[in-house]
Image 1 (cartoon, rainbow over the protein chains, first blue to last red):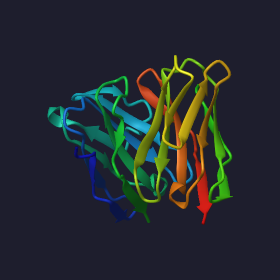
Image 2 (spheres, rainbow over the protein chains, first blue to last red):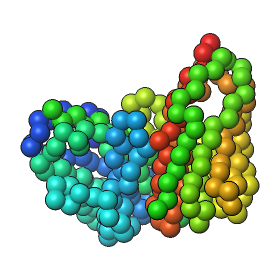
Image 3 (cartoon, chains in turn purple, orange):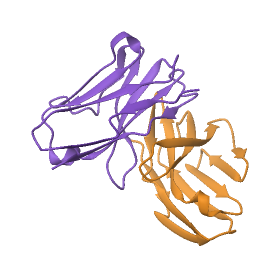
Image 4 (tube, rainbow over the protein chains, first blue to last red):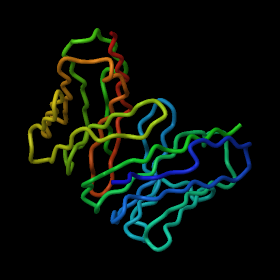
Length: 114
Length: 110
């Protein structure tokens, strides 16, 4: 079974630039999550989709972060403009449903803002 | 507000030792608890999931226990191996999202 695919693996940008991350969940997984993991901390949920609808985006900095999940499959997370404190690993995960069975994480995108 | 704490933050042990990683949480109204493994530069791998009604789960050399009323979980690793070196994260599920601890960095010395 293919896992959760994320790209790119690494990204280095200057502050105030924009960046986008892509995630392809496991086939058939209705629920998709984006997490931010700052070095030395546990992952923090940014946004959760159920199919193509947003379930929770309470911790998403909406002035600079946006995410979409068109057609309920792939998802993109965008940061515009980036700040130094956005340097982190951005993890995508998916599960069969909201109960969390089959919860699987991707390898993440490591973002460095300089 | 749910807070998840993991102790110790880092641990270094010789190969073959049995070890215990601790996780505590402040709100006992959880749906389940998962233990994850994270290798450097990699994503998270789910090790064990314990439902709120369960007391423990076992997989190979790993055993996780859950005491929901006291807000504690432990991950027991038997006969540790260098390949067990990684960061171990516990996460509790509140409604539809997981709250993660900061992890325990484990190094098993050959």
